[in-house]
Image 1: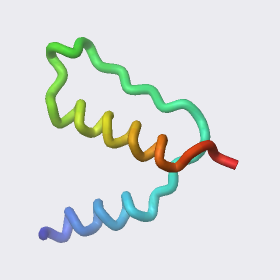
Image 2: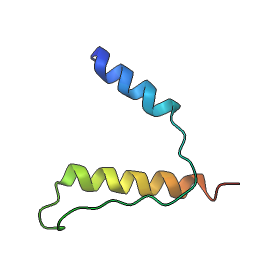
Image 3: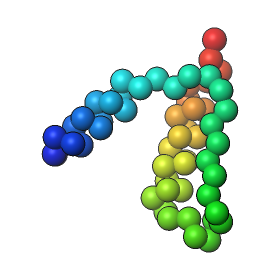
Image 4: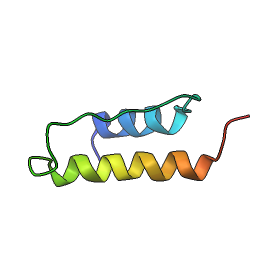
Length: 54
């Protein structure tokens, strides 16, 4: 694993989402890369798993 990947992973692990609305804007589903769709699905799952913020 490269130093860059370690730094990114540690940064993402330390990041805590705040309350609010997250919007993902992309031109069309047909032109959407599968990696981008996977990232959007990941964000949805993480926000759903956290539950409502108190």
